[in-house]
Image (cartoon, helix red, strand yellow):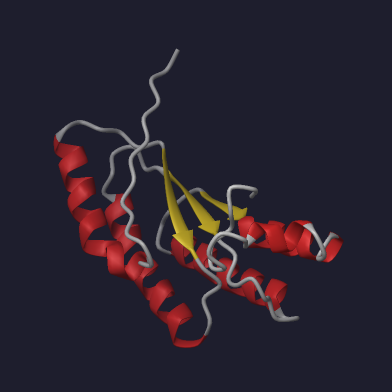
Length: 150
């Protein structure tokens, strides 16, 4: 069998722009320790307006070059979360547009494999199919993050 390890660089309420320096330091330390990454998961939100532009630029100029330096050339999973307990009617289109932009940015920067994980769409499907019981229960804990039910 193959050994599998996971690591995380997280901070409550932070996005990739906030985590860039910590992620860079983590990757540099890992490289010195001989850690090889097969997959790197980057969590992104809906991204709208200026936030979407900033995220695209951070992916292009910060994350992509660092990932391209890795000898293993890891696959990137863009894990897109939900946005709010009360999605707008245009939510699915906004989620698609931002995720496709981030995907294109990474591919054009030279990342060979970018996988899309559309968790936000899963939440929207639940809302469309059962908005009376299950969907509200997803938000029961703090009204900002999906609960353990998710």
